[in-house]
Image (cartoon, rainbow, N blue to C red; front, side, top):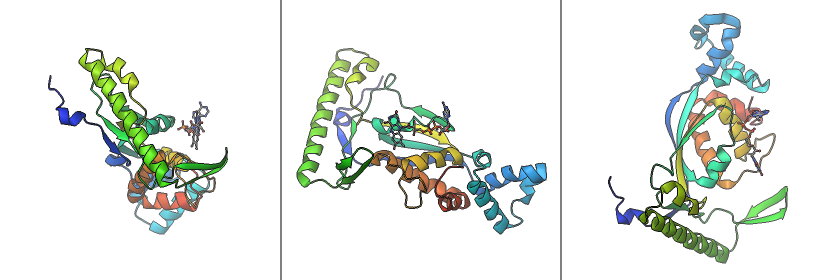
Length: 246
Ligand SMILES: Cc1cc2nc3c(=O)[nH]c(=O)nc-3n(C[C@H](O)[C@H](O)[C@H](O)COP(=O)(O)OP(=O)(O)OC[C@H]3O[C@@H](n4cnc5c(N)ncnc54)[C@H](O)[C@@H]3O)c2cc1C
């Protein structure tokens, strides 16, 4: 068994998330061929390139009338690295999603922890259900960073101490906080992604506003950018119809 070098065990702190599109079969034509089987049967693949304006109109019609199943015949797999508290929210999305996350039982967890960047608004003002976030003072930002970093260091030291004493990883990990970074593969299709984006991003075109936590929204924004490039007509129709998943 190889040992983790000591320098790798020093806690590191980051305020970003990463999203990589690792695999996909997803294009607007996947939507069109699935929809056109209704009218032209198994010849529908041949119909795809015949009339681009009609294709655009068909996608918009499907989105507007919430005829959702043609948006399921595609697949995107993302590798996401984010704090555990983001994954707790993420995995509430049950339908049209598959997940595999790194194990805290089979491998030693690496000390990478979340500390908000300076642009993350820290202070919540207003009453429940009707509040907004504002910047916060420099003192609040410094306090947040110091408290988080101290607490993370202490927790990781305790984790290391238990591992060194022979305690199993699956037991020792109980001391680690939800600000620890984890990684997972998440696979979805355009329909399940649209439902996720409708709930986990804020957008001026949204007919039904949502108020997601900023960190899961950061993940959503990166997934959205990848998806928009793969399926531009579907993406445009999603926005044009108020960002409500069909
Ligand atoms: C801003 C925000 C705040 C939240 N706050 C909390 C909170 O305080 N506490 C908390 O526990 N959760 C909270 N959640 C999570 C939320 O309740 C949902 O679990 C999460 O958004 C996943 O949505 P979903 O169930 O629609 O998605 P999915 O699980 O992907 O389901 C997709 C759709 O399938 C249908 N469906 C799925 N399962 C069922 C079922 N069993 N029965 C009937 N229909 C089904 C529904 O139409 C559903 O919309 C919050 C979510 C958001 C966006």
